[in-house]
Length: 106
Image (tube, rainbow, N blue to C red; front, side, top):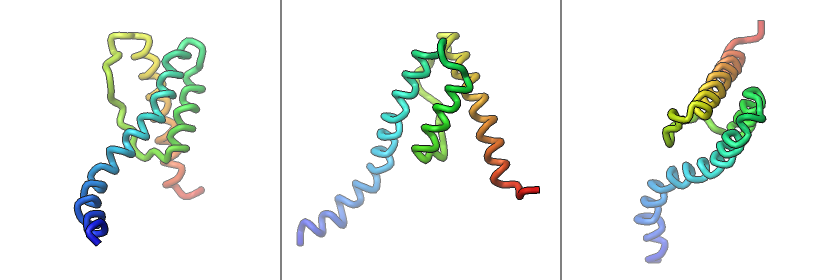
């Protein structure tokens, strides 16, 4: 009985606060290998291929919002330029896909 009260009260309150952080950690654990692959293969992989990798990851992870932040690599012009091109293409593709879903077929 005391355990049930604890689980429904104090523990549930804690779990509700911690769950978003836990999900964010899982999300970034999934994202990091993708970041590594793109950064290591930046010279060998096209922007279109990188965009497809990111789209496959976001679709598979049911990503609705992608917050692009983290360590500042703007001093590394190769990483900065590649990331900027990747995000530009990705945003254009996603916004086109979003418009197609909203517009009725004509």
